[in-house]
Image (cartoon, rainbow, N blue to C red; front, top):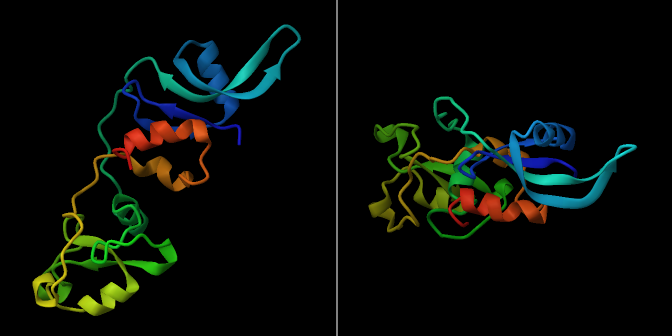
Length: 173
């Protein structure tokens, strides 16, 4: 993988770009190279190590994007951990659950949905938490981080040089 992780001026991961784009931004002096791969590219007069992590020199203008509400982003927010039994599971063994069931007026919102393993979801059923004696790992909230790149990056398979920057963005997870 010779892609580069592009960071904002504040070290927030923005996206993944190919090495050619990273080199172009580097030559145009729009980015600072923070990490490099061992691999080099050569021209007749120059040898250059491929950038692995680059940071923009300037802040990018734009409005903060709200995080798209989706099953996958709920799993990312909750770190693929059942909020009822507090165990991590692969996504194939996870679902989500309404804290206040829809049948009791609960809404499908960031603050009413949590990641749940299938077993705990069945155990809770259509009851409120206190009726089942379940305690949440943490209260659900709308994420503030930009998850747009996280579906592109399986943290277990991301290049080692990216992991420090990805962990910072996710609050050290």
